Image (cartoon, rainbow, N blue to C red):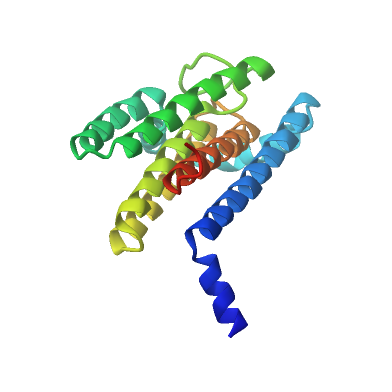
Length: 225
């Protein structure tokens, strides 16, 4: 009886808000801890063996076909591509009068871009020398990894808000999760990032994505006016 009552209490709006907030804080703290650990290792130049081992394992699969494929995959995590997709999806959401959904999508991508720029300036790590493509800017953290996790992650979140636990939601979520992972791998394969850059990008992206989702859930429950 008491257990059933406790479960019903958890489902109350005010208690669901507390659950969302607590989970968000814990996840954000975990991502922040991971990023801080990686940043410390990079600053102390202790990621060499890890970076070399992972890079060697990935680049051993290099071939003309695989290089073309990785170039296509990595383009899906570029700022230009994500901005284009954001414009298209935001236009659709605005036409459907889903103003808040369009807003969180724009905020998530804009914030990730600014945060990545600030972090790169703070750490100013040089890129690997043997890249297959020419890129500019600093290496740590990986902007493609960070932006792809935030952008495609927020799309998954919005998808579940609209469609819930449906087959299409599961399929699209799986595909986008695979795409995020592949984008991270592509940056190492193409020789423009160290594996520690990519992990740090995912960690920083996870932190920002968690903040965006937690904030949006708070707004939806009327706790932030």
